[in-house]
Image 1 (cartoon, rainbow, N blue to C red):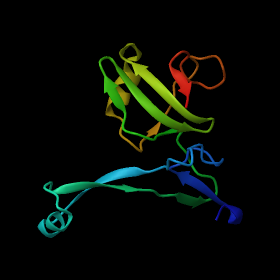
Image 2 (image 1 turned 135 degrees about the horizontal axis):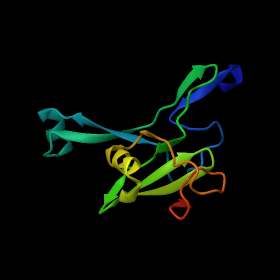
Image 3 (image 1 turned 60 degrees about the horizontal axis):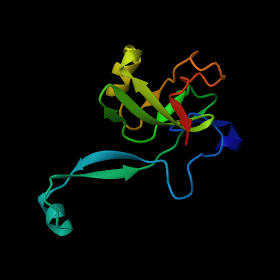
Image 4 (image 1 turned 90 degrees about the vertical axis):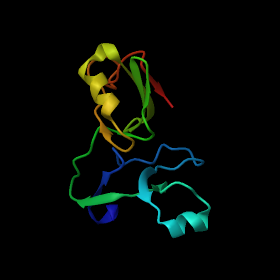
Length: 137
């Protein structure tokens, strides 16, 4: 599809090779209801289960991409949120602290699979990501 003029719109925030290691895969989760028959067949007690899935959305022409995609559930701790991100530069871990105000509130509301706009102008290294708060995974 790419050879025919398509552009990857999601989930990838880039058109390069996938930076995930071969033992991991880019996936997301959706909670789905289980019927009583399914619970009985699977030996489960919960009325739901979390199903993992992967997808690729391709558009004709140039896609409007997000700068980064949240690859795992954000980890919210006291006064900080840790985000595992896929960016055009590769995998990154970004820590958003309470002192960052609006970004912190946005990070607390962010979910697995959401697009994320990394901080701009803080690092001075061209990545646009906060200095001292980002690590390449």
